Amino acid sequence: MQARVRSVNVGSAREGIGSKGRTTAIDKRPAARVEVRDPGPKKGGLGSGVVGDEVVARRHHGGSRQAVYAVAREELDHWGREIGRDLPDGTFGENLTTEGLDVDGAIVGERWRVGDVVLEVTGPRVPCANFAAWMGERAWVRRFVERGRPGAYLAVVEPGAVTPGTPVEVLGRPDHGITVPTVLRAWFGDRDEAGRVLAARVLGEAEHRELEQRVVRA
Image 1 (cartoon, rainbow, N blue to C red):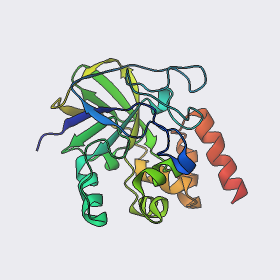
Image 2: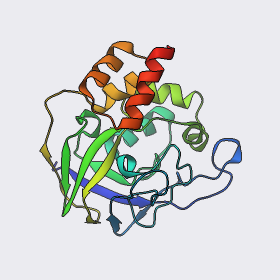
Image 3: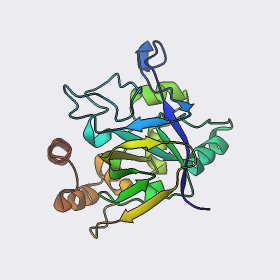
């Protein structure tokens, strides 16, 4: 199967579905078309890189390095079998649900052409309490991390429109070998992987500093 975008998904802020009833925009629904652009910094920027998509917790989400979130349909299918229910496109809060693309095999820094748009892989989605509350599954964060296939955050290099069915082409990959799951493992306490990630300097400045601090505290 040719790698392609299966659906494009956007969400609006809703009360009562996050942790402790917090407002969140994790509930993404398929749209006919989306425009993507660089939203700028987390603080003072536009939030999501997808026009019309809301970001509520801007301290942790949105901004240039988390402009777009992609999840493989194959991964949703895995979890659907695991927990015994259908998971529609957008369930994980992703903006792009893909087919035929190894999202979780992506190298940090690799670039994808999606129609006229160019996106760059920046790292993994780190599961949070709102995600756990939305899924409503026991020990969700632990299980999600142990699975180790979290989907990828993307920066917008060249803006434009994306529609369902748009092909995805991997334009190029850095040679450092740091994958999206490698960064997730580093984030959740694997000191060896953290050392590799820090040495490769593949993260943004703020993320790099935070991972350094996590290693020191561990």
